[in-house]
Amino acid sequence: MVGLKEELLKSIWHAFTALDLDRSGKVSKSQLKVLSHNLCTVLNVPHDPVALEEHFRDDDEGPVSNQGYMPYLNKFILEKVQGNFDKVEFNRMCWTLCAKKNLSKSPLMISDEDAFKVWVIFNFLSEDKYPLIIVPEEIEYLLKKLTEAMGAGWQQEQFDHYKVALNTSREGLSAWELIDLVGSGQFSKGMDRQTVSMAINEVFNELILDVLKQGYMLKKGHKRKNWTERWFVLKPNIISYYVSEDLKDKKGDIILDGNCCVEALPDKDGKKCLFVIKCLDKSFEISASDKKKKQEWIQAIQTTVNLLRAGSPPPHKEARQKRKELRQKLLAEHEELERQMKELQTANENKQKELETVRKQLEAAAARAAEEEKKRLQTQVELQDRFSLELEREKMVRQKMEEQVAQKSSELEQYLQRVRELEEMYKQLQEALEEEKQARQDEETVRKLQARLLEEESAKRAELEKWHLQQQQTIQMTEAEKQELENQRMIKEQALQVAMQQLEQLELERKEALEQYEEVKKKLETAANNTKSWKDKVAHHEGLIRLIEPGSKNPHLITNWGPAAFTEAELEQRQKSWKGKKATSE
Image (cartoon, rainbow, N blue to C red; front, side, top):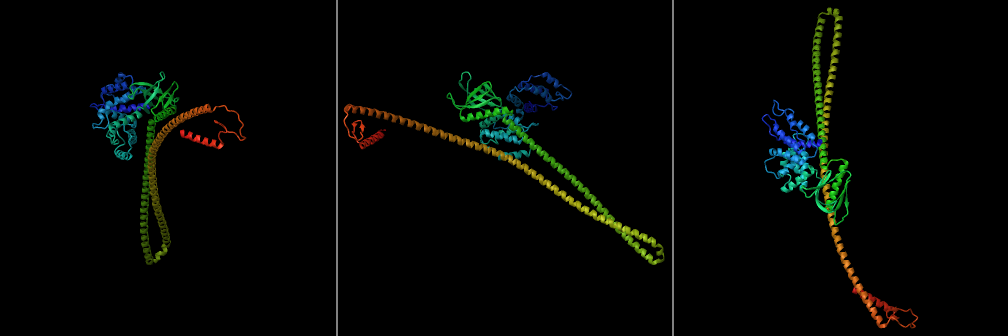
């Protein structure tokens, strides 16, 4: 029921957004009443006007309360829907409310009825978010279905150009933009209005009405046992048959479940291309127009039964779900890649900040070391000047030097200690410079790591592009395999026609041989009759009884003329002559 609710909400959203707004920017309560009443009527839900009045109580802000229309729609209408309504009539009601306001005024190659069907197909293929749009992948799927139904070739390069232009401006098309695209004839050049209309109707039947197959066949009655032509419509769990393809006079249903099966039957009662659908309560014998139609119907019904046994949805709905899951997977991978890129960028920025901090610390340390060096040089100059003064003073006042030797020795020791400290500070400065050099090397290492990460990112992008190309190649290979199977089927049909012609030729030759056999048989009967008449004449003239006379000692030859009438050589010569005459007469 969740999927049904989503499908209903898409059509209702179009109808709701087409309602007129008052001066306060809200939809008037009278329009919502009319919309609710129409929804209850087409959805076969009891209408409760009291609940609507209670839900939309007048308040200080206007005629529509802050509760909104969606809670009322869910509680009092959608939750009561049982599925026993006409989807086409429901969509047509919503289409009537929104088409006049949104449909393009420019002339299109399709009729209003075809535009309505494209609108319903848009609601089926659009994404489950509002405002509703259809993404380029679903646009490509729909256009391919229409092109295939029209019997034309798919122009992939043309759609790729259109897709690139579309992606640069937005994520997809609205329902009205899709109608303009189909009605403009951009992807159906060379096709007339009737062909485009028939293609839209075929795709509408498959995607919206769940029609898996339809066509005329003969059905054997259960009571009278007569054969009647019916229009059969195969859906995921039922086969309905009508008097004609206008679907006005329905004659019955064949309920399908996992226990049903379909089997081919031999030709009988003058009917060919027979098969039977066996259900638990009864069986249905059906005759297709030819062997190809028979095989197609058997395969379609068997596939439907297998789907019912597995509990799987119809093929087009399952394919739509797989396409949606694939898009969600690619979107998740793209988001994960963006997240990783952001993490890498954040880590890189943090590393840059750390490097900047280290650089500033090194600069401060170098400044302090320079200041210390300057102070050391100044101290050294001062000490030198002082030492010179002390030496001059020592020359001038030698007597006072002896008294001040101990003091000067102490000062000299302090001076040497200061020199050692300055030398130690110089070594520390050298170490600081080495640390700065090492920090610069670390910075270079980090930059190389960043470059490697960028190369890995490029490799991942290339791999994604490769997966995309493989997917496109797989689709093309599938089309090629389909074309190859079609070619093999045509070759087999041609071989079958040749075999039928040869069979007819052999039948003619058999009839000619049979006629020749009858003529030979008649000639043999005539020759036998002549031989019998000839023997009777000989017996009449010469007699059948002869006196027994002594003969020669040689072996006797008995002929129709008596013993020893001919020699063996003469008899062989006469036999050969007789056989030759017989062969000539035949």
